[in-house]
Image (cartoon, rainbow, N blue to C red; front, top):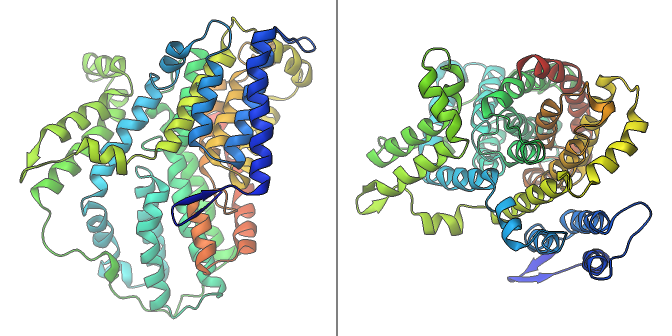
Amino acid sequence: MSLNQNKLYYSFSQKIVMVVSLCLLLNSFLIQVYDWQWLNFTTDQFSLICIFIGSLLLWLFVALDWPSLLTLLALSFIGDYNLAKIASLSFGNSTFVFLFLTFIVTAALNQTSCLSRLTAWALNQAWVQAQPRRFIRVMLLVFLALAMIFSPSVLFMFVFPIYEELCQQFNWQKGETSAAYLLFAVYATLAIGTAMTPINHVFAITAMGIYQSASGQGISNFQYMQIGIPTGLLIYAVLLLSLRYVFPLKIDKMHISDIKSIQVTGKLTLREKIVGALFLLMVALWILPELMSGLWPAFSLIIKNAGIVFSPLLVAILMAMIVIDGEPLLNIPQTMSKGVHWPSLLLVAATLCLGSIIASPELGLVDLINQTFSTWFQGLPVLLFILLFVVWAGLQTNLSSNLVTVSMVTTVAVSLIGSSAMQDIHLNVLACLIGLMASLAWMTPPAMPYVAISIGSGWIHSRQSLTLGLWLLFWSILIVSFIAYPLGMVLI
């Protein structure tokens, strides 16, 4: 799909995909009308399979927004489901509400200079600039920390000018290998930081939400971070070692001065201080209840029972209530139109609903899948099974949309709940690992917008991104499969 002067055009291949997908979705409706059956599938199971395949094709090759709405409409004709039930399973799902509120709170923080001030304070220190390699390590560490709580696509637009200014100081030209290596390290660091926490990150939250919808058991943000943070640090260590020994940067004789693109004059305003403090409060309310369960059990229990929506909802209300200089800290109508990525939210709503219906016992699709997969996976070593799903998630997220990846792979994984072959598998841990792997997108332009922007800038070629990405993905798969999964079995 291309945009030209605000006009939308579909390519010929996209039109073919649309025709095939729409036929599948129409077929799902006709199956219900005429009570068609195929092989051993019931009418509801047959309809659901058509919807799943048709929606997946549209998400992968056409768009995210209207196909998600079409998916919800198609699901409303299955069995006893209607639009009221579909709305409660999608837009009424706590995961959808959580992401929506997190987006608008983060948008308020993005309108302040807090991000620029923090980065400038860290990178413009004399001891940091004394050695080029130390500067690179500190810079990437700052990017890693920021990526843990900010959207990677938004954050990349902030860090890319810093990278280009650094290239100018090093007198690097487009096409130089060191410039390409550093740019890859920059956006790979953002991907790793994204994988480390579910805070403001749709991929991990979607995986956790699909698992909760299917199993009825939730995964807390803190539980995810117990796996994500140590795993991310190990992958980050591999990246740093690779920058030193595998694809080294030629910067030993370089000199670094202050980064002007992030210099901010004046002091923090009262507005910025309050917004920053409220954002930290939101993050603290996600983490502290788990840490304080022994010291203050009553408080911890109340916050836990309130659910994941509580902290962003509380902070959003406070930001909207507090008015400084005639303007609220959070203008909800304006932020909803400019600060929320609605296509992603619509896809999340559709996949949460789709996952819930697939996992519903009434349809019997889970039992059918279990019977099939139990034969395939019976006797398969646990770690080999985990490796298969991790490789699948890692490769697909780097070759297509990572949000579609996490939706598809997690839905297939949770459909195995209750299978006799899966009794030794911790599917809650596997769901976290799928969300983690779906965040590690750095190989090809379709993986994430920042990869496409980087390759389009000319600072790195697609072959370099693919080669470096495969190297880091290989080690990531090993770390996630053989370290993160056993760690998750112990911690959650």
